[in-house]
Length: 341
Ligand code: 13P
Image (cartoon, rainbow, N blue to C red; front, side):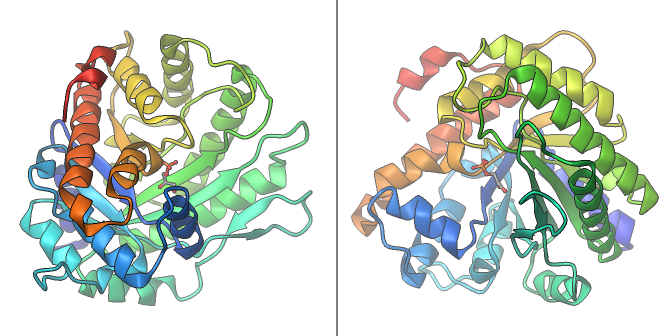
């Protein structure tokens, strides 16, 4: 199959009705932090067991179309000895891979960050393809302070994100483009909207400059919310503010927008997605999820690092995935949180 045909097939699988993406691609420091929050040690075996538990949850394929993994997982096997990407594929879940190499300081700015990992990216992608990954993710971050993000950070980050997307597409791999405006701070929702619009605006300009095929990519944005220390407006107000920015910045050619959860509770992330899928006005894209914390927190809490809790952990994952699947169709009700998994 040609490059575009391969990506169109991956997009069709990833955006199939009622489904969304699980981000299980935490780097070593991040997974160590997430697991230690639940008193679990981040050993290689624990990471293998846990990510294999996620990928092989019976029935989850009805709600999850793709899983983004960290490099280490592509080479690991389930308890049955099946390579984890292969186990996903057998369940109809598309395996993907986070390909950026994390954040470093952007010199010339006041402590702002840039994402690294472009050197030899094409060669690394060839290896990931061989291991079964069909799509990729790259994350940039933008912190809101009275003086940031700077124009330099907006433009440089956009350039790097677009170069990544162009390289991924040159290998026939769908890029998930993730410009994350962080929730930390005491700014209001209007400021988050302004920064999110500026960040996404610069990203789409750069994507055009690098001739990225918009039909063969997925945008993974933050939702528009006030800073963490501020009171939360209504679910509908956040949904409206987020949609307003997306309508201004994201061309209708982009097939799907899969949100990150960014530190929202599981219930908030589900409710916000639901409200967007119920809102009036144009929504030319699929609006779905690509959550890490909002999907995995309850799973880690149920697992506790004990193999005997595998069933309970998978039940927790299935419940969260099902509720987000309903939210992707605008059919979620908060009362459903009380139902058993
Ligand atoms: P959160 O949903 O926890 O924000 O993570 C999404 C993600 O993949 C960040 O890159």
